[in-house]
Image 1 (cartoon, rainbow, N blue to C red):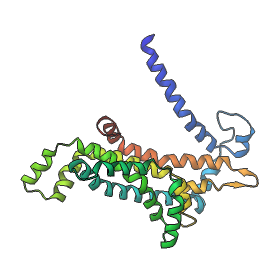
Image 2 (cartoon, helix red, strand yellow):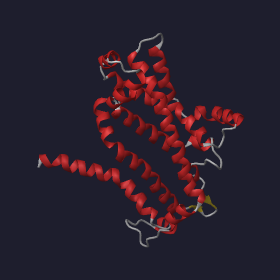
Image 3 (tube, rainbow, N blue to C red):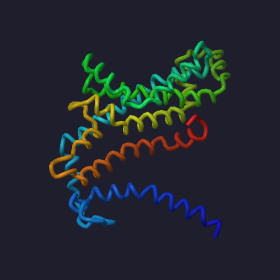
Length: 267
């Protein structure tokens, strides 16, 4: 009996975690009237109207496209900047290195609302408002420190003798870094990219503040579904289901890196 308790507890825990997702999926196949009409475990009348609206209305599907564009840009930028920065922190000691490293982390601790107005005024002045790169650069404020922190932990775990051996063998730094060093920290790169993608994907305040029409993300579209009749709950549920898919795809491709990252890295 005691041997079964951990299994039962694990099953109950998984059911508890999956219940909100199931409820969201079930709501996405219901009409708003049915959702407000009473408690039902399954849709009484199945409908695909909510999904058809999202897939055929440019306001909706462009929200997803815009989000994917700036999130991908942000992930690439954050990793590209964090790799050399993390290497410097892990391999060299210089004046103020620990203070600079701590300062990077304080940017991650600050709430996005603190930077919303400065970013809005700056991007409006230089013509970057309502562009994908504006949101991508804004998200770098908290994703680059996170990526540096994660990657530095992985890089510190690689012996410095590897660098010295490569230099003795005549490798140039770019060749050594791309051909030898990066494969050794591929798990760290995968973990850092995953967190950068997810934090940028779910962030709403900066993405909503820095866009209007051309680059409006799906999170902003979802907050503008109110009408005189109230919120279209079925449509919002379908949009919520579709926002889970990109994250699930990313988790699928980096799942092995994430597992090794939690075991070896600074996560």
